[in-house]
Amino acid sequence: MQALLAEIGALPEVKHYGRVVSIQGLTVEVAGPLHAMGIGSRLSVSNRAGEQVICEVVGFRDNRALCLPFGALSGIGVGCKAVLSADEPHIYPSSAWLGRVVNAFGEPIDGKGPIAQGAVPYPLRNTPPPAHMRQRVKGKVDLGVRALNTFTTVCRGQRMGIFAGSGVGKSVLLSMLARNTACDVSVIGLIGERGREVQEFIEDDLGPEGLARSVVVVATSDEPALMRRQAAYLTLSLAEYFRDRDEDVLCMMDSVTRFAIAQREIGLSTGEPPTSKGYTPTVFAELPKLLERAGPGMGKGSITGLFTVLVDGDDHNEPVADAVRSILDGHIVMERAIAERGRYPAINILKSVSRTMPDCNALEENDLIRRARGLLSTYDDMEELIRLGAYRPGSDPLVDEAIHYQPAIEAFLAQRKDEATSLADGYAALADILDRQPVTDEEAE
Picture 1 (cartoon, rainbow, N blue to C red):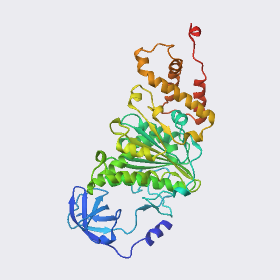
Picture 2 (cartoon, one colour):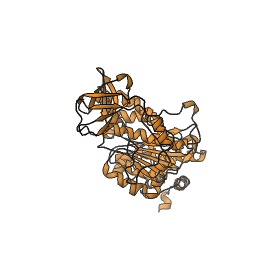
Picture 3 (cartoon, rainbow, N blue to C red):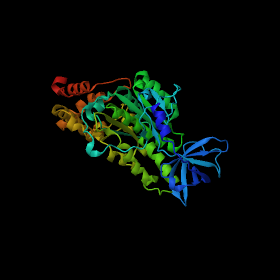
């Protein structure tokens, strides 16, 4: 009732409307009261059959508003009426959203009926908390994946990127994190996802227990660019609601790259010049506005962000990947060569970094990780010579040690999809591996 009263109170006293004067591709040009419109304003356009299509103002040109639709433009033509909505896009989240699957408008798409609305509106395009008022990241998060728990330990309120090419196992790793991570609430945004995989993710990866503490936002790849972009905004707005209730939220988004592609489509439709690899300048302006919303709040709550990045052509230095890496607090790199060897998750430990990890670990844990990384680095430097048989055992004690420990460390990094390892067990298993002494030639004989 409070939400209904708030919506009634927000109704405008005067309605502004215009008319469609031109349609070019997906861009609808509307003439009307431009003084009442701004970037992000919503228009409800009536098609020939009397149906309403929601459009958003994305730019202005020649005294006309340039709009993009949230749906199909079938039946819309010159002269159609466009009514301006007075309020900014927002949602009314509540605890009843847990266990539900919604679209970019916050409408349920799981067939379980309507969702009870909250009393406080949350804008879709919210601003991050002031930097000087935010809490610091603190306390480790148990992700359930031992390679990440040990080598790239994540703290509450940290934002990590998962960088991988297509078909390397990025979605599978995300499903492991969704099921195993210790948190109060999970908010999962599937942005531009394959429609076939949505139900599989919800039923097989999350399961009934995981879904009960989660909200899933879905915008499939066939939906308009505005829907895909808004799904990302909605994901962060829901995470902010639960964070403001002093809960520790895990916010996962798959993927930031598809959000950037949607923003590129919107920018190009308004005449923005393509810059780096066709991406428009607004893409790199919107990325920090989105990603900075995750992190610790001003109270006890926090948003731990895990954002996947689909690298184009396995180039980890392509524009979107490079921009996202500079914003986040660390990156997890997955490589095709490791996946081709059959080791999953295909995480390259040497290229993965958690910027908060050294400060959150004990001295003994940092020493353990430093030693393991040193062994992996030594083996990586000599790998080609070892595989070709060009390295002679005994030539270098450090290389011999790395060769001895490498199979055990590789087995430690591999993990089945249905397997979970706690933080303490991960460090204990790695310490057990590295405490083994290399076997000498005399002992072998």
